[in-house]
Picture 1 (cartoon, rainbow, N blue to C red):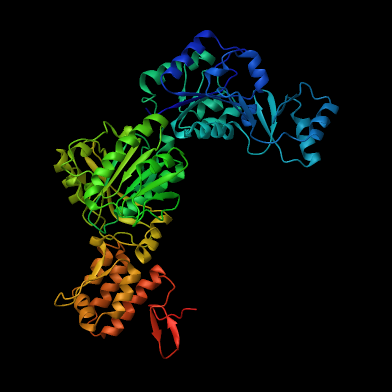
Picture 2: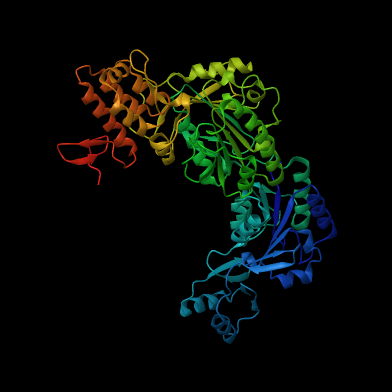
Length: 595
């Protein structure tokens, strides 16, 4: 189910002439019994609403006074969401004969043409207030208070997200609420400006239209209503933007190690974060521990617990990374198998998280996987699988994938492997440009996007966000890499086994090993290979490879140069790693003085 909440305006939306007919009430009751939540969002004061509507308790939350007051019918709890305008403002309006004049807990309301008097009073008193119109009604509220802010407060109380909400309205003051929700609906009698910005315009007016909307929610969950304004734009194909739908999509990001998979995955995650979609990342190697806007559970010494992950995800504003570094490799598939159905259950209950991202998916969902608690990608909202070899994923997972993002120097090879594993005909792929544009460092070339239902794949220029350039820094500089990702100084006869768990320990060990050991690995290009494959820094690997290829350098010189290159890019911890006798000062690995 995509839509878990229906947010309704009152006047001229569920009500006509201030009253709600029995058929509309019955329809809303049916929707409530389906497990969905109802939120009323009205410009009326609560006491006015109670006087005209006998079924307020049908709603899980009521936002009154155009976002100024929140009421919980189950608890009979009401609380203002802002302060009332000052008494001198109200008294001034009365002295100037403003009538009607209604004063609520937050709102002060009248009607046109008294808006001129209202605006003059605000200016002359030097007040920070806003005026909101609603079909001739004039409402005065504190800045930032509107139906969107009130609905957001209601959804937080209910632990739901605007992205699992349908909102229906008719007038100017509904614009903000409609815009914030995943699907915006206008009744037939709505203002033309409201209809133009809505995703769906109903055929009938008022409560009849809302009953029509309820029938469609119950029958199809509005699956037939396109909501393209929320698409995730992450690159361009030629001059056209490339987008992925934020719901019901399963994306496989695939390519060789060091090819840019993390760049592509990061770009998509940042689009999700910018749009307010909650995501959960399954992180076997601790790559997302420092990802901006993410709360990580688990680290290199402590395994995460499923309960703590689920508790955090109940807040739709929290993105979560499940760091599995401390979970033994053999136990990770079982841990994931225990977590996945719980995530599906949470999604069924609350409509979020919106996306599940599985890094190193071939380890957690291998080809031998016998059961998968996912029928369709929508069971987890959206699904992203990051893998080296798509053919090593379980067929149960591959059947869900509708979009392949192939990364690397030969994306066609990755697409062919996916096609062979799924029984599809390989897509046509245009040749790569003869001279790829390398001028912009932030743009990754050689990416192909294939919609599996189509016969051709597109070459795409992907514009990664800021996080990609920084997210690995702390982990690789001073964190703890897995044993298979660490560097081992063994020497030419294999007598040593000195493990560098990160870049900091690599530099320290490099200073202490003998020249034969250092040169043995240097001539084999082991350092650049490790930096490219395990540290995933192709640019640093290229710089170090130039040092490896310079056979005229003395071991001490090449050692210092490699340490300098690492230190410049990663800002290693401040403790000293060597002593410069000429300067009489402790220095870092690049030779710079430490304070």
